[in-house]
Length: 85
Length: 317
Image 1 (tube, each protein chain N blue to C red):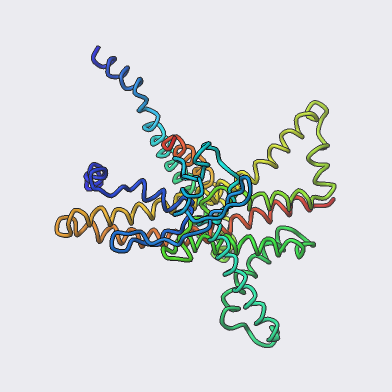
Image 2: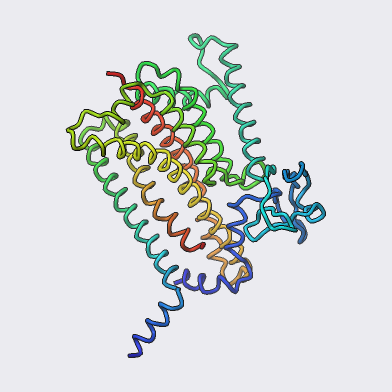
């Protein structure tokens, strides 16, 4: 009974918006790190297999990492907008 | 654990971190340089407002001319509260002018070296040696992605790369000609992305437009495919905008937070948090180095994607 009154008060005070935005930003950072980690892992394995193609692979890795980071940044910007407005 | 202490003390430290950060990454009507003995030292910039004639004044004299700042920090007519046509030279505008001037000087000096020396007989020295790998990198990228008529687009790609690189680096510099957060301003990156959008779409071959509006697909897909293709063509500049803007903005906010942490720690006395001050300075230096890397990578990715989009639009078969 105390729990429900607490939840009701928290929901009414609209503090969940900012907490949810911060959580969203954390999930975006998590997803970005996970994605870029996978890219790094496969690039390292590929360079280990064939060291002379390291230059090409490094370029492709940077481009793919830039794309994934862009997607994570979309979510961060949305979270920032929620916190600021 | 130290971080939780820090967060709990943040509001009572007397250093308003949020305000400092937003002052540095936002636009303002004068260029605030430093504080000298408690007074702000700022370069006064002209506010040019067109409403029943042209009014030019500095921010200090805004009230006498009948204009005041609203809560977003923009000039409004003090009597009616409406925004006039605001063509002021703000901090960002002056920064664009300065960085473009700097880029022009650097590029023209490099070109002067190439005019005076035969490049087949000697390798470049000085500024030309610094700029040659950068320009050749963009040129090779254009050749590989665009195909046979790459020379027409290579100047635009070189300009985009060098301009974004210069502005990213100037944003990291904390003192005068730098320090204006230009590529972290969504209006600036939107204009750059629109340049790419117009370059791609105004120079598309017939094959490109045919693929968008009349693709070779089964009948029941024919009405949907153009909508999807147009949407994807519109999403390309949006993603370019947001990628550059968000990366630069996030980097600046992180660096500013680290530097603000130094000030907060200083307010608590060096004996108590001396260790944390050293840590925050080291973190600040590390973040600055990371920002330099991100500046280069973001300029490179923007140019690479622009060249890929142009190459896709110039395919003929």
